[in-house]
Image (cartoon, rainbow, N blue to C red; front, side):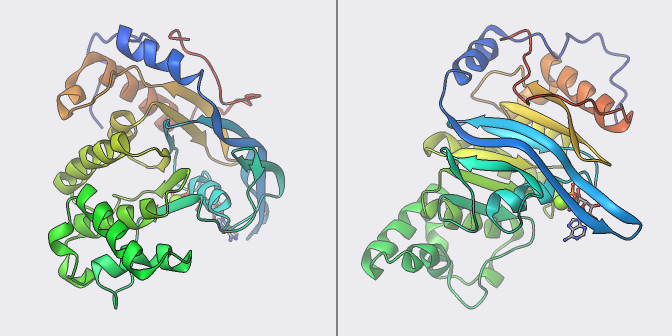
Length: 296
Ligand SMILES: Nc1ncnc2c1ncn2[C@@H]1O[C@H](COP(=O)(O)OP(=O)(O)OP(=O)(O)O)[C@@H](O)[C@H]1O
Ligand SMILES: [Mg+2]
């Protein structure tokens, strides 16, 4: 971990004029995802385990929100509930005002493990969800090719997953998730298995794709640089029980480029995240994740 204490940094609450204007604009947008007092308990080895404790958060249209926190703080549990793969013990999750129950094509998912079907070509992987929805074969093929063009892999439409690099596989997974035109893209450490260089180029690639598609993103990561570079807001969770510690409006303008990694606002945000995650600050209960920074 770099020692950021020796640098004279701005406050992470101080926005650039552009990022401040964006924060204000985002707060005017309609809410797409609403998480309300969400709790999830499991039977742990030594008794009741509170994986998520009264999490409340709203994500707005075309916002990019990351969730970050130490291992075991409930990040995957949260995204599994949103995906319909698990369920709350109490509280509710709503997409466009409707309760989330089970799996639905209104949510696209990209996880860390490569989840492509190895026996299908790249194009057929992307067509899969469309065919399941009943889209005709010709139309599904045309749409799959469009999505492959967007993620830069049209030349590989007839390749099989084992002929692709890790980064390329995740680009296909993104195309496959977006092909169903979901309202929200749920990503659980999608670049966690990639080397640092590929990871960096995937981050820039994802921002470019997101900019050209009407989709809201909820992104789980361990990586402080990744969360800061990608997000409009970062929800920081603490562990045992999994609670929201703080929500940060990222004080960086868009579009973003890797030069931002050295900017004062970037480093100040990273320093705050390091403090929250590694100094084990006692989590406080917040009534809502819509906390305000000085930009509000
Ligand atoms: N099905 C389950 N049954 C029992 N306990 C579970 C179950 N799923 C998750 N847990 C527990 O809930 C807690 C949160 O797990 P979760 O996988 O959500 O953490 P995470 O933040 O995603 O961790 P990581 O960063 O390591 O991926 C952990 O203590 C885990 O052991
Ligand atoms: Mg996890």
